[in-house]
Image (cartoon, rainbow, N blue to C red; front, side):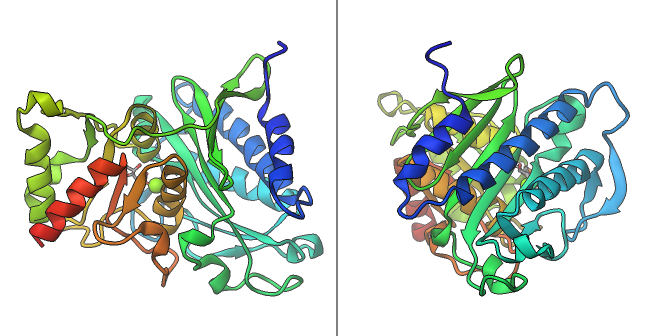
Length: 335
Ligand code: AHM
Ligand code: MG
């Protein structure tokens, strides 16, 4: 027992890394931790109860919502509102940003952007899903409701970001700009315990993750990169291994640990790719840079993009630095 450090303890220890830390960010991360436990409990039961399946609604992108998406959205929203450290949220499952109206929330410094249940098409088949979150300091004056500009900040302004992977184990991985740390949930203790301190991604890898079913619709540079991955060059460990779960969190997590690249380029049906800049790409980009990797839209650093709308999509290339730079090279060569 002596060696166990819980997420709660770790956050308090690390609080001292922040000048003028007042504990608000620690409390905010605590509410994410709590909601993650509640959602984890429900996901573990998903095969047992009639809670999975389309809820009948569609989200703003015109995609069917699964009931667990709605559930996770409600739990994270409620937990964030209850702790008074957040003045509002934006979520992949909400059409518009949501401001919290209690006086204590109006005085709060932070906004949270999230994808409460990413990869939700995988729930019905018992495959890993995740939650992704991103935290910013508000720009609008404290004491008033949050404004759109609070949510439309470039990813470089993130104060913290992370994800929860509901996998064979449940883990919470986060950064506050001082490295990336991973905590594995021990259900018998009800605690996330530090299992992966200072996670770093290898500069090179042998795994590429992409939905190759879209191959004919990819830009030429991406097609060339896929062929590069598949060529037999044993001294460069090629052909690489193809691994695609279809849950960004799970694909990202594996590549973070082992080295690799995840690609969601533009396609004919998704000219800007499928993934959302604010809820998916920015938090993952912050994490990967903190772990020593790279994230771009093929041409530009993800964290430098100034968002213009909440549900904006962007092509996404993320993972081991040398692999991301390779695909960028192909995209430049074959525009
Ligand atoms: P979602 O937020 O609606 O679940 O969509 C995002 C997911 C990612 O987790 C995953 O990598 C990608 O969509 C899979 O898309 P595709 O089925 O087009 O390969
Ligand atoms: Mg998603």
